[in-house]
Length: 58
Image 1: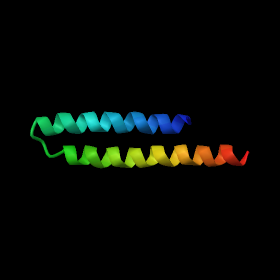
Image 2: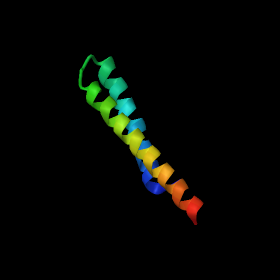
Image 3: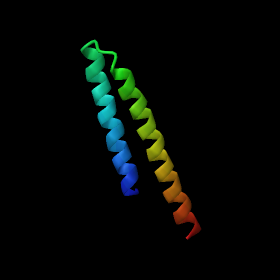
Image 4: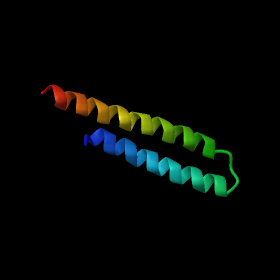
């Protein structure tokens, strides 16, 4: 798995944890963390698919 995909997965997990903590404290800032988790998830899928496509052609 590419290094950038692993970083994106780590950011996604940390953003989900931050969102849960934020929502349990009653703060609406958790919405921003959820959006960041979605963005990081999409980035991870992009890097994984790009790596698979590059390894399939070579």
